[in-house]
Length: 204
Image 1 (cartoon, one colour):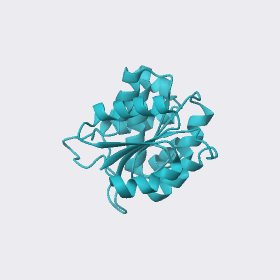
Image 2: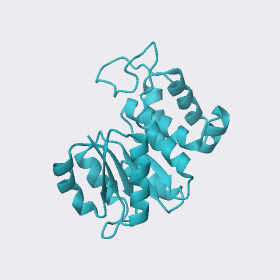
Image 3: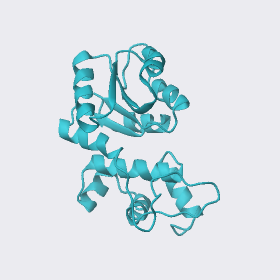
Image 4: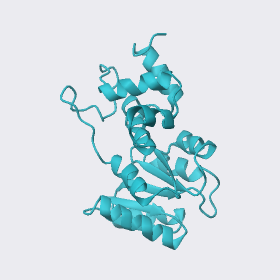
């Protein structure tokens, strides 16, 4: 399994590569300058375990790169790292299929923690498979934290508000939401709340 970094800026690309090697020492990190190099790199270096993608790649319009990669590797986590502030850009990327949006201005430790969180399986004694997608027709089992997040989303809390209430970082909140979305098979807060109401986690 390999981790793929796609960024046209050499220093950023190398820094991200070093960060990923610290997070996953046993994994192979492949650094690419262009999106067009990705398929050949995967054939040469093996199946992807993670994509870290610069949002503003030359010759690529907006979030198209995200959609293209996710269309081929839907189950592989994709992290967008961008110089653009979170907000509308983050929402656009998540809607396109990104699992996490990180600003390049963040401290290296925060970036590392956020990405590392994608590899940490969140297990409970009552449900050893809570981090796996629900099978069609199966009973819905969520962890206490996931149920707590749903209630917070229903209250309209932002990631920052949730982070403050739980005394965790905002990027940790994003990782928890990523796991919840993956668990429910949804892509947004709106879809999460719809699922929750349909399955009795919230009052209609």
